[in-house]
Image 1 (cartoon, one colour):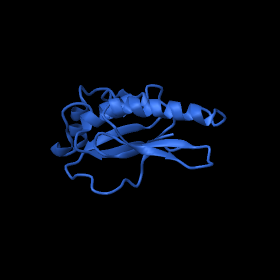
Image 2 (tube, rainbow, N blue to C red):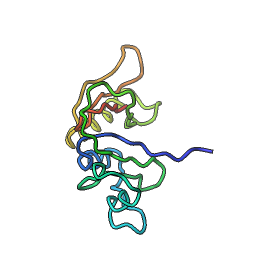
Image 3 (cartoon, rainbow, N blue to C red):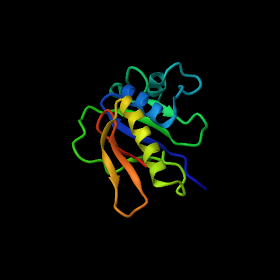
Image 4 (cartoon, rainbow, N blue to C red):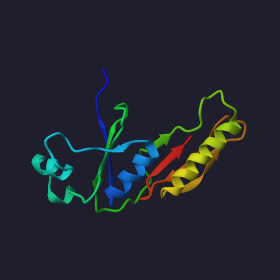
Length: 147
């Protein structure tokens, strides 16, 4: 039986990243649990310290309920090293689609996300391989790939 989990991403500006990633993934800003007017009310009820509370959104969820919930936890320490975990966003279509079709779809998604505040790191392809991806960084520099 699969385990239910949430992904936690430490960041300096939870609201900014929650809004970026909800648009990137087709998620929605997560409503607070039943019985609570805000997420901060819920966090206080859990006993979380005030430094975990943020102004604005800090959680997103899959509107269809299939993907994991994501919590953007406020963290004052700046990111200093390469991520050891990153997301791959699949935008290229079916494996049987032509490579040129993959490139167009991936580049279009990279351009869309760059318009939302991401940075394009560069295209990743190998001569003779039927693979194309674009490396990117979210607004706080966390790495992810579109393939």
